Length: 153
Image (tube, rainbow, N blue to C red):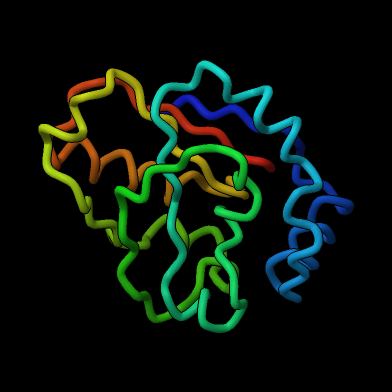
């Protein structure tokens, strides 16, 4: 089981907000919740960003996670491999069947300099992305605790 904390429930207002921010690329929204996020993550251990595929960055021109969590020190310890279809276009069944797409970019010795990793992401739907990220860290040799924090669930 992976413990996740979220600031907001995925309701109509947050669905519209995330669409405007990510779907329409409205970067002006990036700092709307930074103070709330920072307060929640004061004692969260090492923060590891869930990366987007590079093609999404190319389209948007920004990394939505770096934007949302901008005032915090995020570790870029994961890389996401390209997938045929973006998560946002998958239904629940397709998301749950998504194969592992993360590679850990640092050696186990570096990972184990911390006892706790908190994965940070914008939206938790099925949890598949966060579970894949945690499993990749454990497979790479991380021996501590992995939790998650998302803006929306």
